Image (cartoon, rainbow, N blue to C red; front, top):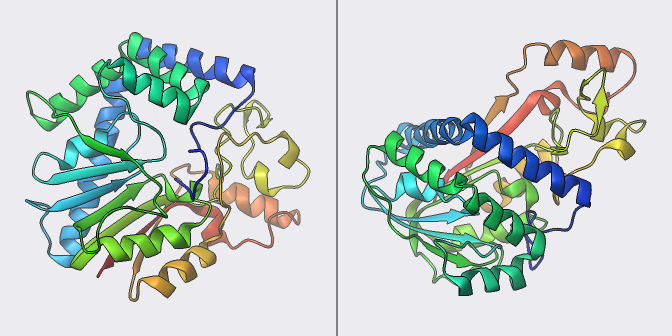
Amino acid sequence: MGTRIKSYSSQSKKLSTAVRELYALYRMQQGGEHRQRAEAMVGKLRHAENDIEREYAIKLRNLDMLDIGAGQMLGQMAYFSRSNRVIGIDLDVIAQGFEPLQYLLMLRVNGIRRTFKTVARKLLGYDRRFRRAMMEKLGVDSLPRFKVFQMDAGHMAFSPTSFDVVYSFAVFHHVLSPGLAIDQIVRVLRPGGVAYISFQLYTCATGALDYAGESREQGELRWWSHLRPQFSEQTNSQSALNKLRLEEWQQLFRARMPEVRFMLFRNESPDLESYAGQLRARGELTQYSFEELLTHRVVALWKK
């Protein structure tokens, strides 16, 4: 999400990158990745639900909820809509089903690469299998048609105090004007409402989101290549990133959400801290703290 820009998934990329993405999609289809993704998503959302209940004694039942950056698969909305009224927004047009007008609009708004990838994913049956996997994990026989608006998080059209909960996962590191989006969250939340904003930190080992894996060292992804000048030109970020550091994020949220709480999650790789220490001993990455180098994900949690 951003401020009147193309979504990060709609930006043009090299043809070679698009080909790799389609091949990866085919491999995921063959390897049953849809089941793993559904399991991981449900686990992540249960943790978020538990965090809100633990911190604020609020059960997510019969509430009005807003999903910022709902995404093409709508898995988050599927999870929370079982017991709540959920609306989603995204800079992309989110096509549900096979209505031709949706794809014409997607082509105009999202561009040919995003539209082609979406159509290919649906024709391969990946969306259908992921939906079924989500239904199995959630113990439901069907999922509704979701209400998703093509909308900028920094310029929401909703009335003030419209929602009890506003949440977002893996989106805010793409927002080029995150202060505007945070202001909008504060505006649309009801008194007593909760915001749960989870995003990846740019200074983490894979903060450039170089999914194509073109930046490599000894056959492995080169950690922190985007922060190391000798390798930065070989790093190919696959999306727009605001590149904010941990302290900048904290200042941004605290200025708008008094008493906001932060939860920091480290990368699970066991060798990462040792490798960071080796690099710093060689004089690299010394301008970054261990905390921001090793923190992979940040959650901002706030009650209005």
